[in-house]
Amino acid sequence: MTEESVQNTLSENEQIAERKHKLQEWRAEGQAYPNDFERQDLAKAVCTAWQEASEETLESKRPRVQLAGRIMTRRLMGKATFIHIQDMSGKIQCYVTQNIIGEAAYQAFKKWDIGDIVGVTGEVFKTKTGELSVRVNQIRLLTKSLRPLPDKFHGLQEIETRYRQRYLDLIMSESTRRVFDIRRRTINALRDFLCTKGFLEVETPMMHVLAGGAAAKPFTTHHNALDMPLYLRIAPELYLKRLVVGGIEKVFEINRNFRNEGISVRHNPEFTMVEFYQAYANYQDLMDLTEELFQNIAKIVLGQMDFEYQGHRFDFSKPFHRFTMLEAILKYHPDLNGDTIHDAAVLRKKLDALKLPYKSSDSVSKLQLIVFEETVEEKLWEPTFITAYPAEVSPLARRNAADPSIVDRFELFIAGREIANAFSELNDPEDQAARFQLQMQEKASGDEEAMPYDEDYITALEYGLPPTAGEGIGIDRLVMLLTDSPSIRDVILFPHMRPKS
Image (cartoon, rainbow, N blue to C red):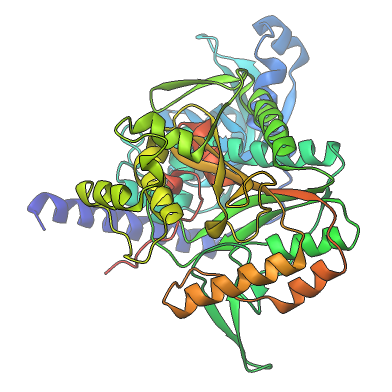
């Protein structure tokens, strides 16, 4: 540790000690941490209501407000002080003078610190520079901040600290608060869209006896009373389709999923999705619905359908591109053609040249999928539906009527990453049972992401699942797009981090 960092640490420690001393004095007065202040107004609402009013209007009407928030700035000028307080809606300036609140109250106020939370009662006016402010009649200390906030000019610069201490990031950063406001409005818009379309929102279990519904490695836990292992949900799919069997023909869930996989700028082990299912629909219907949904969300949340993400301009008003998986491979690999793309030896040679791993037992379909996932996905920046995935890597999707080797499925890619996955559901119980058996063989050969055999789900299918299409959309990745956030950690309030050493 350098001498400068030691001094900075000591300086912060000294500030904490001084603030704790002030807290003890406050406690001795018998007034510490009151809970009887009634906030009646928010900063943004006050500014919206009176920003356009003239000084004369404000002086004649003298609108009275009662606000509460955190002191973010302070400018002492003898017997008068300007402070900015921040609440959930934004900031507003307050003018505190000894003449109005009294000498004793003013001397106590001068001992308070930036970061303290206060309650303010006063009248709205405009300063000589035209800034809307509150002329304070009464001010109370509600909560003492024992730790100093980061420097207001530099904010919270270290990214890891922002993630670990999100509460501090939210205090200091208006852009961070905006990200999570957009997240809130995105989820609301999504929910409203589906409800308007007649979908019913439900909740399904988060602890499963079998880890099914997706190809992923689960987190394992244990139920003590039943003395049995349970798995944190990797997807709600099989439960939602049981509900369609039961007659809830349009159903959705905004859900938390848990997958015991890597962490990256696109992956967090705990993430949020929406899954929805519609009877008497197919994957093509959902492509149209998805375009409409994304257009609707962009209009409501951003106020427009064109926006920028990481220097690239998107326009959701234009039709999304549509390619089969093989068409996309051929588009970005001109060295392949309609014949060689089905040649296992050619595909292995290509993967070897690209230094991409594969198994000697991998089929042509799996080799094609590796080429697509590892070399094509990242190039799909414009909104693009990819269809016609191999049946053997889509164990829950309906086979294509014209070509049973592929399924009626799409994935939506935007900015080089998967945003949504959908397919016409497999509702043939015998076909589904056979595919579960194949998955069990994969699991026995060491594939930890292969699905188990779900006997109860097969039983549900035997009662009859109507022709159905279903889709899952990654909400975190969608919010990344709408907020121009490069990392998934930027849009999750508390992303998973390694413990501090």
